[in-house]
Image 1 (tube, helix red, strand yellow):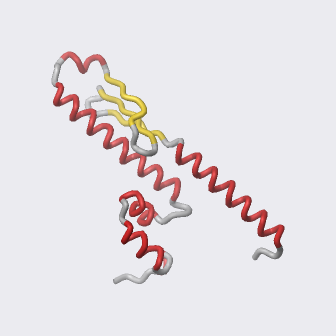
Image 2 (cartoon, rainbow, N blue to C red):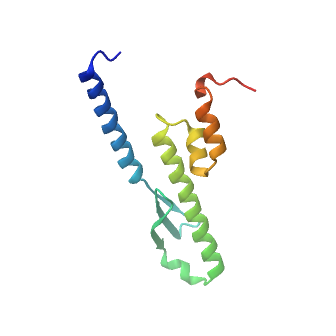
Image 3 (cartoon, rainbow, N blue to C red):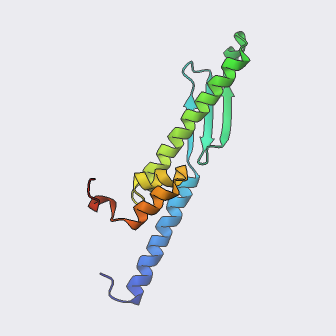
Length: 126
């Protein structure tokens, strides 16, 4: 229990530092994924932006533009999914995973329902 204004201020400053640290860690998330054949390596950032793409020179032995495009797209998608998983893990101590996913998916109805209802641990099964 907070007893006075100094304790309250100290608690607020600690929470603020923790939030800034969490934000910095989240912004620094980068995930690298390799294709099944190991010839494509994609690194994405926290927003799914492509940070780096490495193509093994052996990929050019069998020219297949469509196949290469599909492999790159699949590899980037898998890296993006892992980046979202990493963000969810980082934020789990402060945001329930279901609520976090709803935010990322733009599911405002679910977010508002979760915010207006009882805390996740107290929800009744329907």
